[in-house]
Length: 242
Image (cartoon, rainbow, N blue to C red):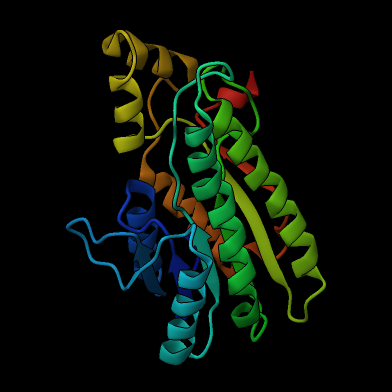
């Protein structure tokens, strides 16, 4: 795990499985995690933030500037999923998924840049293997995460022009233990079979752990990853190696 001593790292979706794991890993690596989410949901967050709300982003970033005077890293971990193929999915659900996953990531990158410019830093965007391969019933999720991955490349190229540079990478997990997979499985006609099929798709024959994704995020935030930018990094048990 990389060293984040004295680094200020903002994490969105910090009440969720991946976001909370990232915040904990940042602290374990010696950093200061600024945890944000729409609701505390029984867990500790520092700022309430709806990632789809541009005004809220401005307010939270102003609070971060007042509290810390800088920002060294951002992890855009807020995300939602909706099942449905292009024919079944409602436009309302399409817009909801794109708004949280893609618009929220864009706004995070946009409003983090002024603070990151002061000392340089790193952005990690939570993409997905669904940005790299399609799923017949994941029309909105595929589109949103594909957008996150290419947005990350654009942000990386812009950040490389800054002095000191701002790096940006996309982490692409496969199915992870936690509420998102659980809700997807429950929505299936046969939940037990759906879970078995998910696991069978992964060569390592298990679901990933949020802590494993968090460890990769910490590495990408750290100076050990100083030459890594603009990359899609699968953490998928070999799923995309087929």
